[in-house]
Image 1 (cartoon, rainbow over the protein chains, first blue to last red):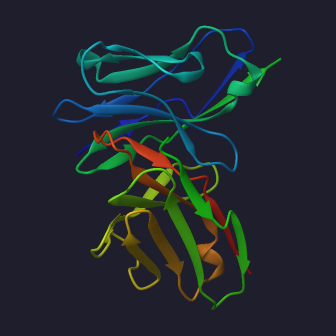
Image 2 (tube, chains in turn red, blue):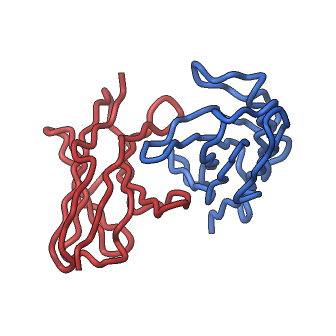
Image 3 (spheres, helix red, strand yellow):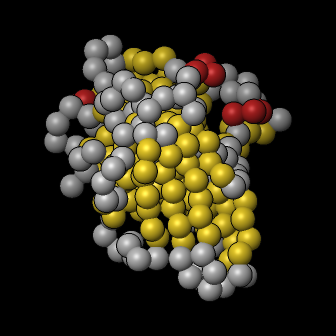
Length: 111
Length: 116
């Protein structure tokens, strides 16, 4: 069955430090992969997506993600975190006509 | 582009009453919309897939008679929580497929339902 795993429930990084949020998926075919961000009490905003082609994808707000088929991973990265990046991050895979979400990773940013 | 709105953003209702939540695609036509439920500090749980002009497809374990979904036009889907109880209190989020396909969904801002 299709599934998405985000191993880290909560991550704290210092402002200006680099960030990597992990995402592993289980899906038999070529996956459609997404990263969304959710601020408290808000809906989800699409950060970036991977459908095919270049395995390193650029998104909004300075985020990027790399698709690694051999590792079934789609990790999200940012070279320098800003305090405004504190939020909940969800990885998702498109399967069977719908999105399957990971459990989410809460990002806290220390000043 | 691809903006989805929800109304109301917050609603408080008394136990036993019904409440309707609207989801609109503002600048595109959405043949397929989705309704999610989210508990605090948890991920999104898909409740149902709503297709314009046809009956919604509910996920396993979701009560069809309690959560009525209507997708009467290409820009509007509604979720009605009937005979609401305190355990129905939650954050409800809708989304719609964008025009590019490929599973890309655009999400509304969510509706916070509190049943007293």
